Image (cartoon, rainbow, N blue to C red; front, top):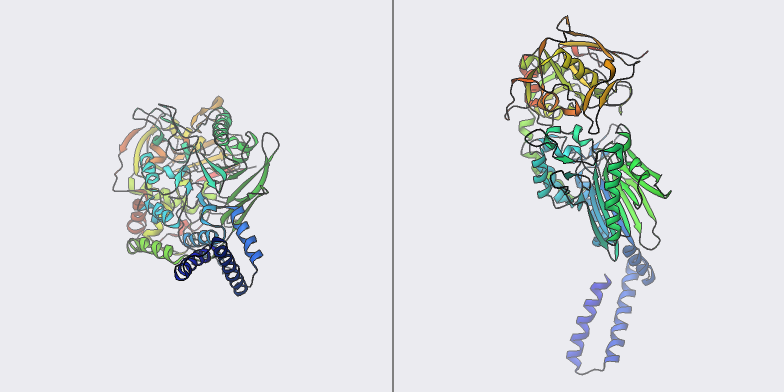
Length: 589
């Protein structure tokens, strides 16, 4: 307001000077000063404040850097309300409105909005456009900086590059390099100047991306690894990559360094966790984290004993993260907020995109009298689809075996993304269950390969989540979880064998007969899981392809056909038990 008043004052003085003729400079300045003071006083009285109060507000505006952040959005676009009547997911329109509010309060040059990965995949609005719709919305919201998570690669490496090229946000990653030259694929860091205070943003993505996206996307035409995530030496290579770029940013003049990491903590590889990176580096002031879908704000000591804030906001826009840095005191504060007011323009934009495919997705396929589970009935935060058999896992595996005509079928738990509630099941539901656009295929492998596949798949049973947990059809087995897994993996999380031939998986029965290690069997599943070594499971390498996939037919299409044609639109009673039919017997005592 004062800037506008000064312009008004100048215009009035010029008009007055022209009217009165020559006037000495001191007189002009006295008149100008009197005008500015009287105008400011009048405005402050109208606003219920004093000139001193306004000056303090202006100082606060210039002294505060605001960093807003999201992570693991997974294409959640809209605001949703929980059973308690409170907002559960804030949605993109609320993010946009809150950013505008912060800009109004602190000034555009002091506010940055960023994302810590896994934004472009997870809901139909992303699947139908291979992530592009989410990029368009994020552009509209006003994201400034972002990094790729593992799921940014789900539609192929080339598609990730196209999406990044369409983004207004600057995408960063210090540890993704092309092995042919050693160059980083994306910029490792960027420095932003907030009125003389420089803040560096360094991006880092988990090396779990190799196995938690599609491993083949990171290889050349000969099957050799073409890219690296600095995955070697039990975390040391990752720490070195981060440290190198933190040092470079400091040398380039950054007063503060913010690490934007898709690293996570619970359920992730121990030495690639965000807290492990902090403990083994120096020079980082705050870590904006993602990947593990948690909500936290922690203080973790770095290599020199200095406290570093690590913060994460959950998943699917449960919250918005807000970091403030006081330029004068250097105090850094991290909180989560839950804004509910929405930006009307962004909401209209999102609704317009969704309207383009909503009619198609509303087609009814079946109805169910039971919940088909991905989550623990007794713990809504426990993704049991990645830990044990469920009725939805059985249903999905049966769909592949029936539609593809194989001896057995395998579906990875991490590929089954949403729980199916009672009532109507639509095409949109099918695409939400299977959002990755993977291709159904049939391969031929030996019984020994199947045993190895299951051993690696069930290596974490009763210990941790595993996206590679195998849901099966045409097969039953026992997993002795009282015996430690002897499955061995390399630094990329790939299966390399079973130590000393000690298996925890036993009593494998295929269609009523004991598994023959030398016999060949046909296996149905997605290309990701059984051909492309998804989740690092390489046991089927050397397979013979029996039925190739088609670009026009994906896993969601297959699931939809099974519900509508094979089940006649009704989910049978056999799927009524939340923990399935007992195909995978887990011994825990």
